[in-house]
Image (cartoon, rainbow, N blue to C red; front, top):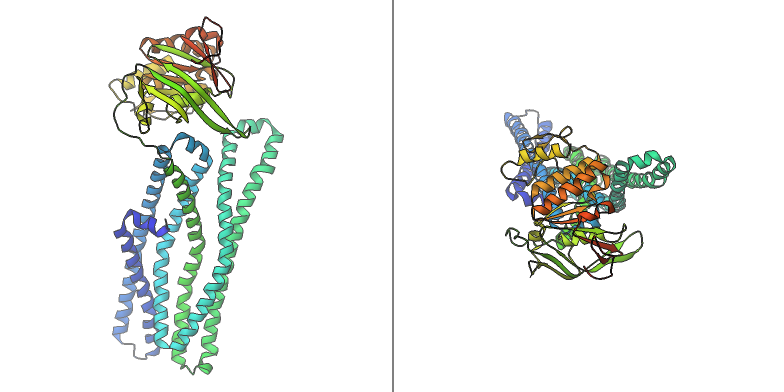
Length: 545
């Protein structure tokens, strides 16, 4: 997709209107050259010239104003569309695809790239009236003297050739600068997310700046600087050739082509009038180049996301659950730290209403991955997922996920009660805030939360509140109690979990708290992607769950 296609996609009529207005304004501006020359050569300067001059000025001003207004609206609309389209593609893509692309790259696209495209759209439409001025002046120059016009065209052709040769290097440098942006975004996340660790370790902090952040920032800056410098050099060469042409008109044309003085004067005036629009066009090239590079990045990300887009299938509500079962399910993923693939499964597991199942085991054993497969966030590579005995097929992932309320170890907390409806929701939320001892920190005002700037343990309590308000058939808790003090740990295991079981919920808990294993109906131990069947009263036996 090109920048023009982005412009036309929102409103073809508005975009074409802006182009037409730009052309009208450009031709009106070029027409002023002929009027000014006629006035300079005329001693009488009839009133008709003054009227024509005023009329052309009025047309130019009005046309350019409305063209600018339409361009600004088109640019803002394009940014709106791009951001919403990318956000929708992210939300529609499988979780694994989004995780592999990484938050740093996605954030750079949603911010840096979209803003670069937004800046390029006005430049794209702004070039049109300037080119109209150039075209109008060239037509006028051809009318004055065809030999001088040919000389002008050859000079411009030489300038374009030199400009393109220099600009190609600039494009490569700006492309490299854009690639550095993804790494910079990742390093900036390290600064914000790892600020405590960096503050605690001076040597690590200094090495991070000197060996990681500094070189990447320097590379991005140097590539951008070299690219912009190359464009500036190309711009300067283009303007120098134009002034050489003006010098040729003044000093060589009268001798070589026997051109009359007034004609030479008209050519010089037209050439001088060409300088501002050509300067605008050449100055817009870096912006257009950056916009084009950013658009390629956006399109590449969108293509990756769209190619893996999930089929959400029907909007049928999730059914009542009798049993949810995994049968010989496997899932593999690449571990960067080990440089190899890791496989979870094959796993056989069944969840039923009114049952609490604990999954225990060492870190990195695949517990969270299994939970994501069970919740429909990851698609199994083999095996079957059955709900009430019926196969959960392609296109039913969304309906399947509607069964789950989950609090993962890296739980995100929204700043309002999004998607939670029903009578008495606010009152229930306030009661839970009090029970979780968050009412002194968080208030609910019109379903909006006063703050989510809490400690990790408090945020997970707030995430628990959201999950409880969801009131779905299956609850999934991934190391929820890890950041809680003994009071809330006791409350979670001995009150909240039994209450969910009593309400007929199926509950899956990933935990290391062996003190509370007695709460579970079944305990499944995970080691290296394999399941060992446990219960709270017997020893382990290596069998499927």
